[in-house]
Image (cartoon, rainbow, N blue to C red; front, side, top):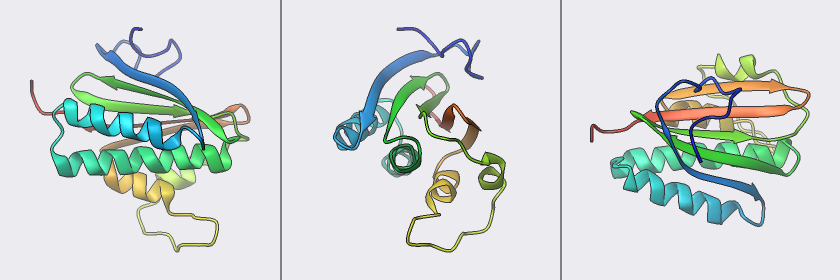
Length: 144
C-alpha cells in the first residue's frame, strides 16, 4: 500500500498510507475509532485529534446520507494527517459549501456538516460530479 491514488491531487506528495477501509452504517463506528487511534498515534494533541475525528465523522456521515449509503476512507501522513473519503452518490455543487464562511442554520435534514468540517480541519477540498464525491481534509502534524 503506497501513497495517494493516481488521480489524487496529493500525487507526488511524499506520504505513507496508514489506513484504508470501506464503510457503511454498520462499519461507521469501527472506522471512526481507527481514525481516532491513528490520529493520536501520529502525535496530534488531544484537542486536535478531537477536531480531526469530528471532521472525519461529518464527511463519513455525508457519504452515508447523501452519497449512496457507503464510502471509502483513506488516511495518509506526511507533514500533515490527510483523510480522503469517496462516495458514489449523485454529486453536488461543492463550491457553494467550500466558500461558505458564515454558520448555516440547522435544518431537519442537517446542513451544518461541511461547515463543521471547515471549522475543524485546516484544509478542505471537495471534488464532486455525477459519479460521486471525494472530500479531502488535513491537519498539520507536529514535527517528528
